[in-house]
Image (cartoon, rainbow, N blue to C red; front, top):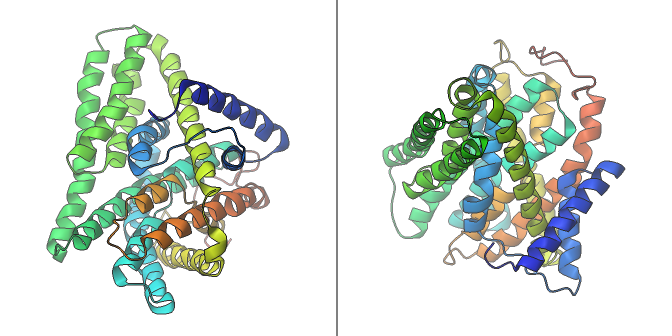
Length: 406
């Protein structure tokens, strides 16, 4: 963000406002409109430079987006779905990544390391894209909870898998026991960092009824928990998720004043809107400069392979819960497959692939291609599919699980 001049930032804010108004008027998903606007800005000779890096995505944009989403999650409903979402997130990423990596190695001749890097970073659905899309579509409450919470959780799994591969790329070795230990630290360390920051600062917030102070303290909670966890080698996403759930469920009752609640929620609505808008504009700007035509055949293959990997995770794992209260209707499973959008997190990880990996250039270009497919084709077709399956707020199915054969 430091690379953006103030006049450029002001222009971007005007563009985001215009895109928001036009998207709602013509029924275009907001994220797709932003990416199109970013592509247009990149092709116009106006000289706006939109930087995009892993550090920018993780340190600036992800904390407010994850925290705001978690702020709106009722703990009781999240807890009820945890066995299902944890299974989909942890085992699902492993299955999807294995399918994609195996296909790239055996069918395209990639090295195992390059195939594994791409498999891991593309296996996790992106919480930024998923949450933005499903909020806009007003999907059925239980479906939103499952899809959004799974996307938040599987990002942490992809992050630890990516860090393990970074160690291997650097010449290190890793035993299964060490890998499990690193996974446990990534998850539990992140949750502990988020919970500790949230509890300490909520205690402080309980001593005031000044809504400006309350907003400031929640801002520190969001970024502080994320950055602390990342500094400790844990998951910033899990930290911001835990902190947001704590503030959203305990903060309203014990710390945030009744007067301050609406101000806090309003601030975080705006913060998420701003971060989401700038992020997808930047994604669009960088999409315009990717030589996708040079990898068109490989891109088509990778898109199909990514969907196959996702299907190999969603349907068998959902089948495990068919006789439980957490069983998923067939339509929910289809949404998990087709609505598993890719976006900012995958791009951030792709940009962080070390130069020593021979397929690094292909990984970056193909990741941008999969993200473009996800945002435009999957993102644009999800609203009519949700309406067809009666999974929107207007004609939603019951919050209770239905028979998987429905």
